[in-house]
Length: 485
Image (cartoon, rainbow, N blue to C red):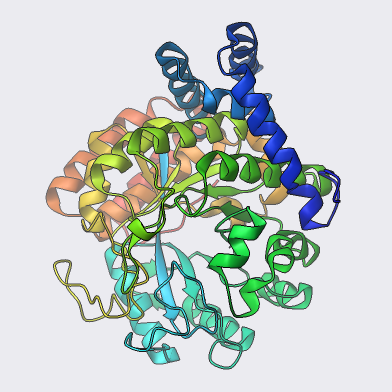
C-alpha cells in the first residue's frame, strides 16, 4: 500500500489514489458547509501587499470542496475571485503562441489519439529540416514569436537528436522582421540526460500532459508502447527539473476519466512540484477530448459540459494562482471567450494540428489528413488578435523573461510580489506594436494602437513609461525590433 507523500519522488505516493478518494469523499461531505466554503474563498482572495498582491492558493482538498459545491452564489464568487487573481498577477495580457507539429510517427497505442500505432490509414509524415524552415517562415509571416513543438513518440523516426536539430533550425531562421524567440517543447517523457540536452538547446517550457491521473484508467488507455508505463510518465517533470529545465507545464485531457478525480490529481501534482523543487508548474493546460481521425469523443463517457469546464478552470486559477493557464483552439470562440474570464492567460491562434499544416496554405485552407484533433476555432491569427483587443485584452508576443533568465523560481518570486507587472505590461505593448507594424490588417492596426495609447497611461513608473513610449515610436518609425525590459 502506497502512502500519500507530496515530497516523495514515487508517482503512486505524490499522486496517491487513496488520498484522491478521501478528498472526493471529504468534498461531498462538505460541499454545503457554508462556513467552511466562506473561509476557503476568503483564503483564496488576492491581498494587497506593497505595490503588488499575494495569494495563499488552495490545497487540493480545499479546491475540491469548491468544485463540488453547487450553490449558484458560491459559483459566482469563485468566478469573480478567479478573475481578480488573474488580473492581479497577469493583468489584462494574453500570451499568444502556436503549435508546430514535426512528426506523427508514433509507437504508442493511445486510444484517444489518431497517431496511435494501429491507425494504418492516416498518412505518416516527418518534416525535413527544409520543411521545418518553411513552416517556421509561414508562422513568422503570421506574426508568431512563440511556438510549442509537438511530436509523436518514436525512437527511430523521432529520436532526441531529431528534436534538437529541429529546435536549432527554428531558432536559426530570421525572415524579414520575424523570429521565433521561444520554443516550448511537448514531447514524450524521456531521460534526465535528454532533458539536459533540451535545456542546452534553449527551450522554454517543457510541457507534458498526464492525460489521466487514474492509474488503472491510464494503463487501459495506453495499452501498448512506452507510454504504458504510468510511473515513468508521471515522474517525468521531476526528471526534467533534475535535468535543469525549471519551467514545466502540466495538463490532463478532460473527458478520459471523472473530472473531479483529474482535478484533484492535477493539483496534487502542482503541490508535489512546489514541495520538492520549490516552484510549481509554469503553466497548466485544460484540453478536452475532441474528434479526430478514427477517434470519437462519445466513446469516452466522462465528457463535461461547458459550464463545468469553465468552473474547473476558475478553481485551478484560485488554487494555483501564479501559474499560466492555457486554452487551445480545441475549443470554439464562444468557449474560449468565457474561459478568458476564468483565469486563462495564454491562447493559441491561427493553429494547425497537421504535420506541415502551415506552409503553402492560406488562412481559409487547412490540411486534415494528419491532424491530431479537429480545430474548433479556425480564425486567423489576425482575427484572434482583433477579437482579444475588442474584449479589452492585450495580446502579448513577449518572450523577455525566458531570454532575461527570469524563469523557474526567479519568475515565480517576481510574480508573487507583483513586480513582474513592471516588465510584462510594457513588454506586451512593445511586442504588440511589432505585430501591428509588420503583420496586422488595417482594422487590427487601428484598434491596436488605440489600445496601446490607452494602456501606456496605466504604467505607473514614469521612467518605464517614457522608455516604452520611446521604443514604440522607434518600432513605428524604423525597422528596430525586440525591445524588452
